[in-house]
Picture 1 (spheres, rainbow, N blue to C red):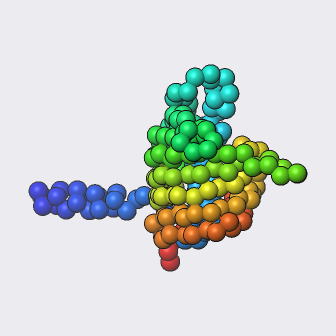
Picture 2 (cartoon, rainbow, N blue to C red; picture 1 turned 180 degrees about the vertical axis):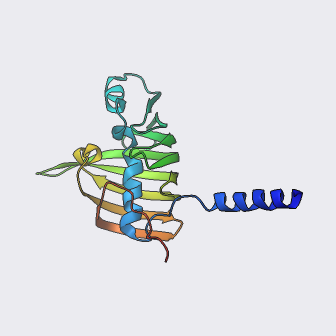
Picture 3 (cartoon, rainbow, N blue to C red; picture 1 turned 90 degrees about the vertical axis):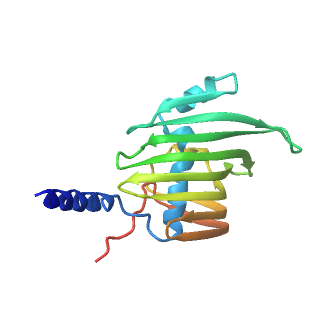
Length: 195
C-alpha cells in the first residue's frame, strides 16, 4: 500500500511538471510580439499613464495590471551622454494583460522621440529578461531598440508595425533584427501543439 501511494505521488508530480503552457511560436514575429507586450507595461496598465504624467518626482509607481498581478515603473536619469535621458525599469510581478499568461521580470528601458515631417515615434531601447507563465511558458531576453508610435503602445488594434534593431532570445533560439520592420499581433503567439 505504501508503494502504491509513493508511485501515485511520484506520477502526480511528474504529470504536474509537464502541465505548463506552451512556448512561444519559434519565429521572429512571436519573439517580437512578446517583447512588444512587455514594452507596453508603462502604458498598458490602467492608471499607469495618469500616474506617470502627474508624478513630479522621479521615483517608483506601481499599479495593478488589467488581469492580475502588478507592474512597477522605477525612474532613472542618465546624464552621462551628450543629452540627459530618462530611463526606467519595468518590473513585472505576475502582470497579465490578457488573463491567459502573466509576466515576471525586469526590462530597463530608455527612450527618445523620433520625429519626421509626418509622424512622431518612440525609440525604446530595452534590455532585460521577462518570463511568461500560464498559457505561454517561455521567456524573452532582450537587447533591442523598438521604434513604435505612442498610439500603438496603447492600441488594442489587430496588428502593430515595429522597427526592431538588436536581438531577442527565447527558448527556441536567438533572433537578430537589423532595422527590420515586423508586423505583430497584440496577443502572444504560442507554438503549435505537437502531434
